[in-house]
Every structure is written in C-alpha cells, then in structure tokens.
Amino acid sequence: MPKDRAPTRIQKKNRAAILEAALNVFSAHGFRGATVDQIAAEAGLSKPNLLYYFPSKEAIHTELLSGLLDTWLAPLHDLDANGDPMEEILAYIRRKLQMSQELPRESRLFANELVQGAPRIHDALSNDLKTLVDEKVTILTGWMDQGKITRVHPYHLVFSIWALTQHYADFDVQVRAILGNEDPFEGAETFVDTLYRKLLSP
Image 1: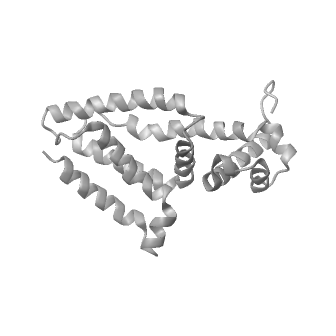
Image 2 (image 1 turned 90 degrees about the vertical axis):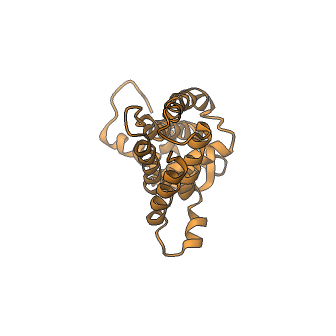
Image 3 (image 1 turned 120 degrees about the vertical axis):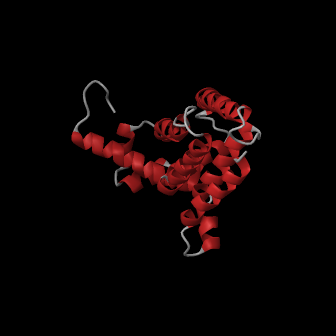
C-alpha cells in the first residue's frame, strides 16, 4: 500500500480485515500451509486487492508476528522485583493462562513459527526475549538467595510456566477432546496455583 499519504477509513478497515483473516488462516494451517488465496477469501477481498496492502504472504506473517511478540512479552515485563515473590510469580502464571484463553490463535501462530525454527523471529528471540528472561531470572535467583522461594533452576521454572499455560491454547483440540464439556480454564488456574505454591514455598 502506498505510504506517501495517510490511509483512508476503508484502507484501515481492509488492512485490519486482512490481518484478522491471516491470523485465522496461519493459526490453523501454519505459515507453509497458508496461502494468499485463503487469506483473501477469509477477508472477503480479491487476491489483487489484498496484494495492494501486503506484497506477499511473508509480509502479512511478519506484520502479525512483530505485534504478537510485544503482546507475548508484556506479562513477563510485569514481574516486579519489589513485589511479593509468590504473588508475583502466580500473577504471571494467571496472565499467561488468560492469554491462552483469550488469544488462542495468537498462541498457535507463535507456536507454529517456533516449530518451523523461528525463521522470521529468531533474532528477536535471541535478543529481546533472551534479554528479558535473563533479567527476570536475576530477580528469581535473588528471591531464592533470600530464602523467599525454594531454590529451583530459574530458567526451567520459566520454561515450565510457558509449557503449562500455553499448552491450553496450542493443544486446545486435545485438551477439549479429553475434558468434553468441561471448561479447561476453570480447573487450570486452581491446579497451577496449587502446583507452584507447593513447589516454591520455602
């Protein structure tokens, strides 16, 4: 889309429709399985119209991922060194569960990118994500040194939180097939709260 003038209301609407449609298609089929034709059909636009806004499938995918990474890192940014250690960790877990419940397509989009080797966000993982995790691991280690939480491997603690919370979005079909009509998130928060309180209570 030309960038020499501000987009019109219709252009903003169409761009948003493309990104919303692409989120559906990419989260369902992954980057490799998705096509521009599928995205255009989902958005209710012709393929040439879609390509006016984004020159390629790659451009759409990159746009989605760039916004998603900021969203994904936000809960970890909120982990406060000055807060109560147990409550800070549990609040982080609850935020991650909430994201799995409210943003399942985004979670699957992110997971699909990682499964493919993260070709479009590898630099961000190696820099932005690693820097943030290193910073929060320093906080966790400090709490352990002060005897405020049990000493465990801090990086694997973070990995376990990701695994336990994002599972509900990334493997939603499997979870719901097993639980049937039971809402998986009703039991999930109670379970992870109990698990981490027992694991980390000094």
